[in-house]
Length: 395
Ligand SMILES: *Cc1c(COP(=O)(O)O)cnc(C)c1O
Image 1 (cartoon, protein in one colour):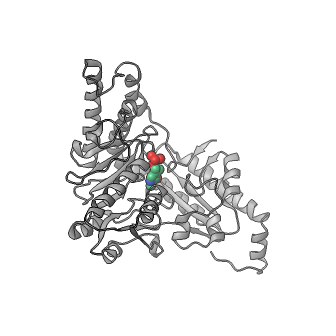
Image 2: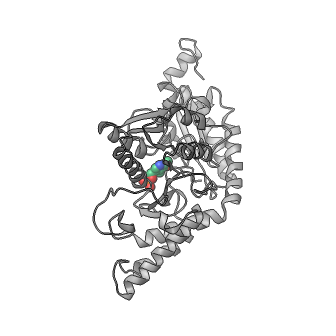
Image 3: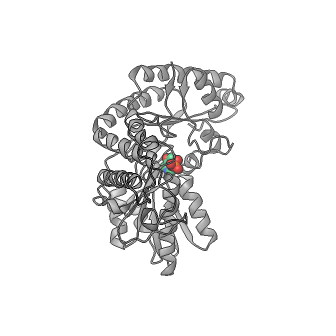
């Protein structure tokens, strides 16, 4: 049995998305900027995709800018708000310690340019509160950027409340909603969101395409210069097939959001309950406000990398945290941010589910994970020291 449980890294492209893309490779292949009929047909498709994406988010079509993915949307949103702030001599940004690197590294770059960044602490309940945001606001704050839901530990942040705090203070609010869009009901106007990043491949659309919602009245800064595509804010010939696939996948996800979330949540809870029985382990992330598909644990006395390799041999594709940090030996910044010490953070496992997973697959995971953890502990010197009392258990 082959179980794909790494949907937070990427999802399988749905048939709906693939079928929506096909005509735009070989029939309606024009450049939307061309004035002739072949180009104009592509232009019409592009604008229809923009309308459909806008409808799913509760905004106007002109507030949607297509990008190459979630990372680019994050970069552009943050850089844009920083440029607006700098013009008014406001150079303070509020974010959180468990953001995606697309956000954290952009903030690092701005710090080198003289911006000051406050990263909110996420130890308490593995989440932040709107009050923490309110308390961090200063007269020179030019941006609040907090993710909608965390990609490693699944915590869902109190976005409407944070949005309300920012609105009251007159500060632009951006959210990296890459893990949330298509999985949680979002309405940017009702939730007081000024800018939002999304990515096609996290909800069964294609990779290499995303979108930035930017409220009318907030001026975007180009991160890619060139032609006048996307209202002059993002140069480059539009990736029409990918954009059509993204729009179709998003519509499909939003149309089935409730039923998918119910199915995935039930599988998630069965996994959490079963894996919690393994001795000396801990659930990572907010236990209540949690993404439907996220299961994240730390197991004491094992190495996450070995766990992943052995699980793969038993047919389970999982992750130790973020796909982006795999390959480096540093423990995940997210697990460190929630207070896991290095040794414990190294023994992490993230299983991220989608509606394509089945109850039989959950049974399989529930059989193999405890076996593999027990095996790795049986050959671990650290575990031996814990068992003989030479070292103290943390979990
Ligand atoms: C995947 C992910 C991104 C990056 O999106 P890409 O489309 O792969 O660039 C950004 N933020 C979060 C929270 C993600 O999960």
